[in-house]
Image (cartoon, rainbow, N blue to C red; front, side):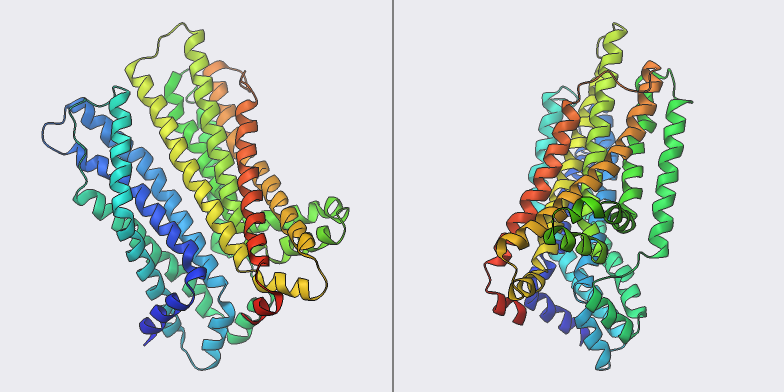
Length: 452
């Protein structure tokens, strides 16, 4: 019965589940594209050097991609369930048991995971072929190697996206079903919810892991040359993930610190500050990809810049191995940054679209569309500032230790244009997506939006 309800819920609430579907689709595409390099590597006739490069690329890039995909799927599914707390409270009030609600939520996630994975097969095949062409063009893989898309790509893709979606749904459903009806109704009305203890613990653990790698890079890996990238490259990712897990708490604290500047913006600033504090659990979904985007892109780009400068200063020519590392770094940057950008746009659209009733209520009480846009614009601006700030801290955890290890100096002698470019992209993505989605939501008549 609950599985049938899950199917009807998906048909009726396609917009609410669009973000979760996009996460599984793009995640499946990313994971299967790089997993196909393993199918290519184990094919007959592949030279040993090419096989090693393909396995390294699939393992490193695919491994980090797996973490990002799991993170994104869990975030979007949690958002989709939180947006339905009133519906879940109603089901509880009419007699639905926790086990039945769990089966419904997990059933929805299983269908999304399966459909998203199947839809990702063709794009993943094309993406894997493009990556292989890149490796051949840069002389890292022999020209005669043919791309293969077989059981490894399909198995890994299904395991990550389908199993990941189901596991994320189980975690989300467990918290929701543990709450009493009155607690669920209260959360539905306030749009609040505290950050779970487990999330805080894992966030702190990731931060400690990043700090440990930073110390190791600056001390143990000093004067180890390019090998210092092995620890430095991971640092910004772990620290960014740690901050992302703690993002609801960081957003509430930042909103309190920015109360003065927001108050200067008048009524729009007051509402923006109230929303950032009261809806921190929901809006933190948009904060997470900004932190990841800024931290990973800035940290890895400057790390590669420092390594190139150190090699030039030593009068060394780039070897094939060093070119492989450079290509790997840029592929990692491109893949993770692209996925973080998609995650940001996806989450902002889902979060803003779900607020149509809120926007309609503001308009019915006298707010103009311009004033509603001003509120969401200020919220996006604060999200960008906070996300960039903590993303910058994560990036510095890679840049400073690696620069010390390679040059003995704490800061790199590099252009600030790289950082400015990363910040500009993050700001544009957040502002344009938020304002465009709000403008679209305002096209619906206020009375009709409230009724929906």
